[in-house]
Image 1 (spheres, rainbow, N blue to C red):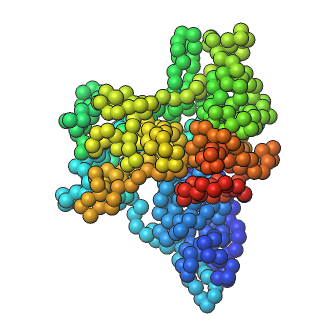
Image 2 (cartoon, rainbow, N blue to C red; image 1 turned 180 degrees about the horizontal axis):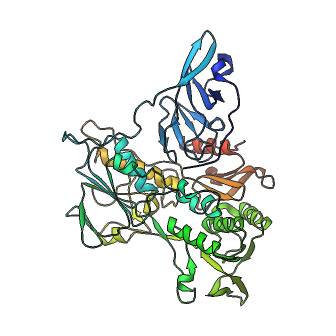
Length: 531
């Protein structure tokens, strides 16, 4: 996967840096042998790792050290400073490690070290006793399913893993489908999450372009289209969500395009490249607005039609909603707020007001619905998603759910929530995998099961402005703005009853990391965060 590049700069650690310049708990970004290197100090220990995040190449020197880890400022990946290993998504690969020497009171970074160990151990094939279930089947090839398959191997699980995906493409970088890839700024080779050899090398049977049609929980098997079945010792439902489909024929049937998969994004690109000059986006959601920005980058005239009075107000509040609208209007997007489309025809969209908007291309982004039908058909508890406990287990033993389809207990808010964020889905997949391996109680010498308590995080890109959002706030009674929206340098805290539920940051990446850490630690004090 590609990303932005950072320049090699800062002190040359090969020539030495005085120990006094390395504050405990802080980092210094520099270089060694022409490579970007990050040096971190924890007490008497000095660590040196690559200074670039393996996700999109963010400068880790702008991140946050927490214990023996460093967190990425852009998308909150987390790495072990000792081993370089990725701990939290969206990190995939490990950071390079470097040898460190101390001579008197000077620290030198001398050479790159060999990897600590293979970050994902290969499955055992020697017939020895197996830790965990007899086999694992994962239904869904999105963020949660892919992360779970990898984490099973990290946990040392050596049994059969089957990952069944209805998508024809291997697990991919879904956020990029509405951002740089759709805008034409990211080549397709960046989109797959893994090299083609990854699944074979790690003993993961990746079954693409197949539907699971039924779950036979008593018989412990999943039934695929065509009648074939796969047995499981443990099952993970990571079926995700699907775009809300607008009714036909009023909305043009196949003329409407949606965005969820790589094939969907390719279809929008093909339509834009086939001579389309004018596009209408139905819906002012994050997906809808990112599509609008990407189509503007391709030179299309873009109109956004949505029933609410301002974009993103329900999630971001009025100030941020107005700011995002202004960003788009400054780039030429025309908004038709408080309107809905009553008809989509060849060459135009008719609004409920009677206004007609010319359109060569129409994309709908009006929300998603969880793919809960399999679970409901098998008798699992379903309530606007598959209901799981704090360990992500469903109402049936050895059956888990993760990602957009799962409704889980919010450890900070008290109610059950369903969060449609890519990074959250990855982290849920990791937790579900650990609990699958550890079993019902973490017995047999295994570590105890793990509660899912990750602070939700997502990011949204609008031209050259990124919004990083941590926490979860469905309702709030006050907002606290620190900084300047006009300067794209601010945080907005969403608060209820004196508690900060969520923080949105623009141009203050470290502030977003600090807010995330405060929520993890359960702080209830009034919070003002500064960049």
